[in-house]
Image (cartoon, rainbow, N blue to C red; front, side, top):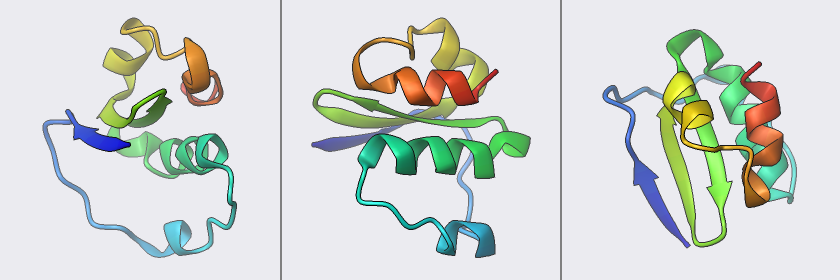
Length: 76
């Protein structure tokens, strides 16, 4: 699996992220999207990659497909 970082900005991990505890990749991505919602960040899980992008771009790009469904729901 590869990471595709498409968001134009880079962010430091902060304290709330340290409390994310799950072995489910989709749940972790949704938690990260929620934690960084204020910075317009969405984390999506696709079959072969993890994508970090702007929230609106991720939703417009079909984040609701495949395993990205949980992340698209958190973008609403």
